Image 1 (cartoon, rainbow, N blue to C red):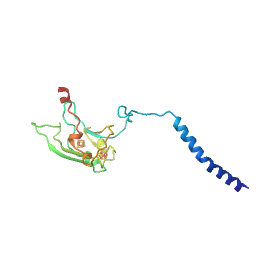
Image 2 (image 1 turned 180 degrees about the vertical axis):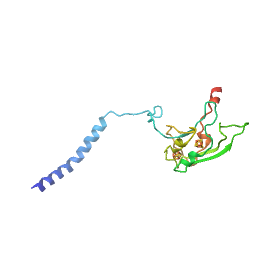
Image 3 (image 1 turned 45 degrees about the vertical axis):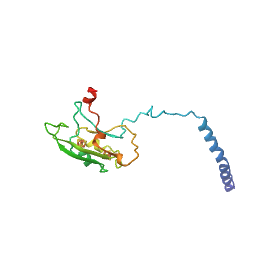
Image 4 (image 1 turned 30 degrees about the vertical axis):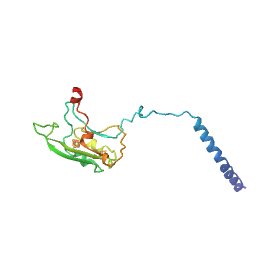
Amino acid sequence: MSEFWSDVRQIASEVLAPFQGMARVGVKIIEPTTVLSYPEFRRPMGRRARWRHVLNRYDNGMEKCIGCSLCAGACPANAILVVAGENTDQDRKSPGERFAERYEINMLRCIYCGFCQESCPTGAIELKDIFELAEDSRKKLIYTKEMLLVPDPQLERID
Ligand code: SF4
Ligand code: SF4
């Protein structure tokens, strides 16, 4: 007898399933929707959002990066290349003895872990909440120092 009722329940649930599905669709159709007019409106990112990197400068325009390669050493994805150059009194890019003559991040390898930012002794490398990273070629995802370095605030003031 209990087997009979179990079969009845099974058949009833299979017969009702399409109607339950249609009822769910009906509710979704009349439910108010939330549409954000992206890109004019961007949903605020979380405080700890980590996306595109930048290389910071001091207020006087000097580069914060001193070419120490600690970020490259900390990167688990081997995505960072740093080639250091020597500062001279005539041509000084950073307050330290050295600066990053070449700085590259392979964004195809990056896993956005933030270890580079954590390991940097000067706060030079920072992951910002800039998430629009799509490109149409792999080459454009090798970020160079020129792409990463923030504008010189001194030059901005002159403009
Ligand atoms: S966020 Fe992580 S994976 Fe990406 S460059 Fe920095 S250390 Fe490497
Ligand atoms: S970004 Fe920071 S850790 Fe990396 S080379 Fe520059 S100063 Fe060193």
